[in-house]
Length: 299
Image (tube, rainbow, N blue to C red; front, side, top):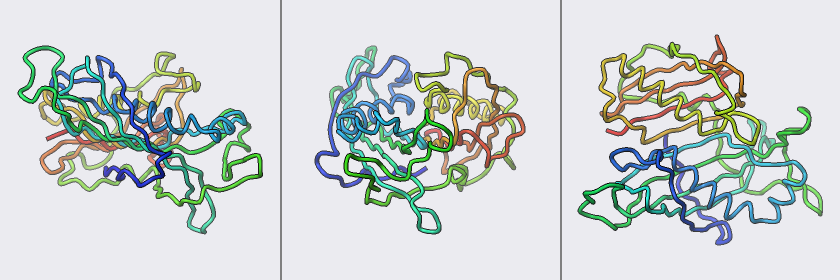
């Protein structure tokens, strides 16, 4: 669950911006929840930077868009107030990955952001360090270029078209298998294997977005909820549990009307609690999972 470091990029690939969080993005102790961090990437690293480029506009006109495939977030400080903006220092990278044979396997767009905010509480009393600029979170998002609405045979993109032909972005970026998300090495496993969560998940339109499938931020909450249930069953108090590090790999989307299940394995890690988990249809093995996750609750 290690977040990639903020990479060194050209000045035109870096920007700063502010955004308001939603009321539900701040926990009762003032911590910015991991689910509230993606806006820093969406509005700054991708929205303010990549989406403003001529390349982005040209590719979108040809039906080629970057689809989220991995999301890693970490909460680092607080407290924050919902009445104050969060500042994001964001960058983006574009590059490619190669398979074991050395062939180009994917074209990636990565977004990184460091998040800051003034110490404050939504309701009094205010903290002793009120107004101090705090580092409150980090987030990384990996996207793969694809033609999501094209024919199945045309969806994979291994070159980016331009007015002068096609090209492969020269930077080779690190990549990993979605199954690696489950390969955590905790201090102690609380479950002897990945076990089915008894509560099935039924998706409706409320879970979807304009991309015509379940929104990516629905899954982290589902995994955290399942982890809380499992830890409660292990006799652990959940009163002060809040996920502060979360790593999600997206293999394929879910859709309204589908019923899915979660398998998870709880653990202890350096005094903290957490879980490795995946989501899929009934009887699904990990390698066929739609989404995989590892998360750790703060100490």
